Length: 155
Image 1: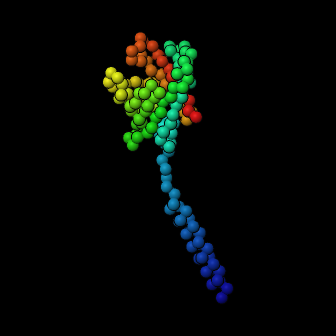
Image 2 (image 1 turned 90 degrees about the vertical axis):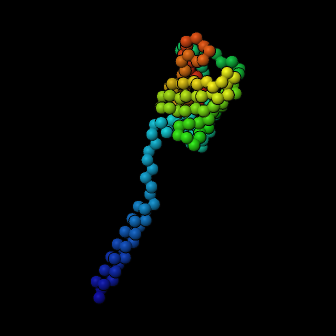
Image 3 (image 1 turned 90 degrees about the horizontal axis):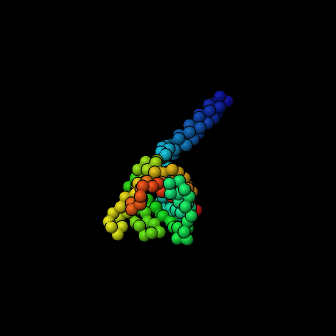
């Protein structure tokens, strides 16, 4: 008579363990890791969808330029949209438009409210982290051939 309670205990323990394994295994979803492109876009706009960047430094042809009082307050804001790697942006100069993180090294801004019509700026992304944005544009419109590097920080 004693082997029967041991058998019941074994069956009960087996059912409990297999049930626990079944329920813990079913609740897990596999989330694919983010690509480098996705991580950089999160850094540009923040995971919450909106980030403000403040100008820290400007280099022209590799030479650090002193910032004017207005430049010390200059900012850009990027707000993500429903489209992948696309954000709206506005800056302290009143420029508005769309920004596209085309790749891990290329950021395009399409200014849509320029006084002379639409304008496109293509930047090379030198660094883009949660707190640092370092971008470079060659030959900005209206300037002689030069390389302008803009370095921003976020709080």
